[in-house]
Image (cartoon, rainbow, N blue to C red):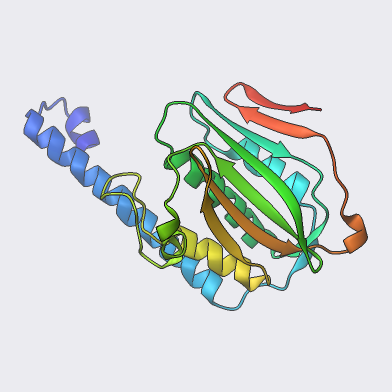
Length: 219
């Protein structure tokens, strides 16, 4: 409607512009809800069989495609071993967690770190840590409930399904996911995943950094 009015050269009152803005915001939220419901349905139904995947390459590709605001950066500590997971589900989990860390940040500048650690029993844990406002420990389990939201009803509030989708995807490949608050501020989300072979657990000092100027590797 707004485009048609503009093409026709029709000026509308400020109150109408405001109403159209609210309508656009509502439409965006409805589209996001439908997309999240579809993702939730896929992760609660039969999942594809786990495959051996190379997460370093996949994470680097995801980082390159993230819509990163000015003033934000993502650091990825490489050296992940080959893991067992549905590739599409793995990409969904990493992409959504990185996007959440950006979307819910409360400052104009922020840094997100993706790193890993040993988790025992043939698993590693992948952690995505940010320096945003954090989540109180009292909500650490409730945030995974479908439709539970901490934020008010605004553009960043989302559908409340995002972390439920992530939890379903991680549990489908036999892992677990948890969330904790960092000091002095920030959030750490940790999920586990099986490695293809224990002997592939190696460390690397290489770190890939993505900011608004591009993606570079540093030692």
